[in-house]
Length: 376
Image 1: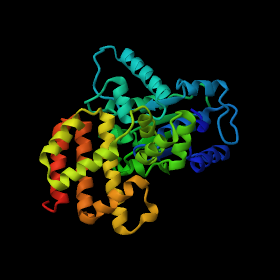
Image 2: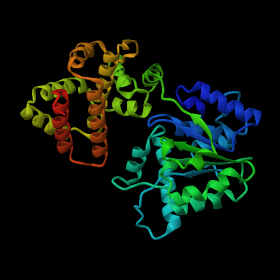
Image 3: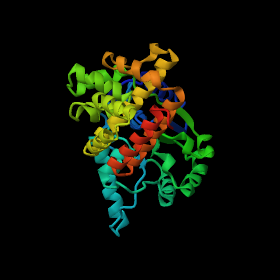
Image 4: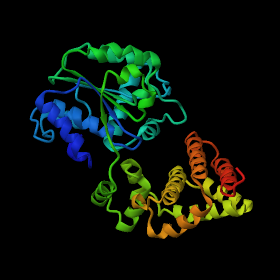
């Protein structure tokens, strides 16, 4: 992957390119961003640039032997470490490892902006905890003990280092602090708070922001061909998460606004029959639509909070939503909005763990009803 394939992030790209051209690269870097940030694609493009034999002023050439291998994720001097759940049924470790890396390369090719959930779904590890094992930690040290095969440098990309087994995380501390000559670590994380402080202290942190709304809109316009009216809704829902935005382009017309308004009105009226009916309807949605609804609901809670704070200058609400937000804010407080948002976070977590959507939404509805009517 080249930098040019990644939308936005021009300032970070320039910093990375300039550091390589000046020969001032940190030997261990942490590409840190929230869920949905493009830190993995950025790490892949950075590795490509490090290996490129004809580096340009702003990007890898894309045509040398090193770039061609990097584009297929088969460069022998780029090593990958990523979380994996225990799905092994093959007793031949070498064959299993070869199959997994084949899946990994295919995943990066087909879903260049995919996230951790996309990866586990891709290789069939759903419903199982994915980690970077102790054995993988030892493999990191073995891999880096060898000299580069073709490039002048070796690159180790550790994706989701927060999922490392504690033994594996502790085991790489020494090599992070004193790596072999011309060896570079790129840790790619969405949760710095789950990393060992000793790991954080040994890395240079590169903060990767979410894309701006115009950047997401421009990318969708160029790549997806989605009409402007649908793009507007998608961009609002995505909140800078390009992966989520691309999934929304493949889904049917989104009706989250209509469902949310009906849902909140039923909560306010304590119309338990309607709430049960809605929970059954939400149960029939696919996972992406369920996530969209909760995501939209939390967005509306945020917009209501903005109105209560009088900070309408940063509002992302569309014209069709403003009247509802005005009415909704009359019986919501900062405390009730905070409680509602926490409940929705919990519901999203249970949905990701394959809980019963009907039970999750019904329980959420009853608790929201209590909050909105002042009973909770």
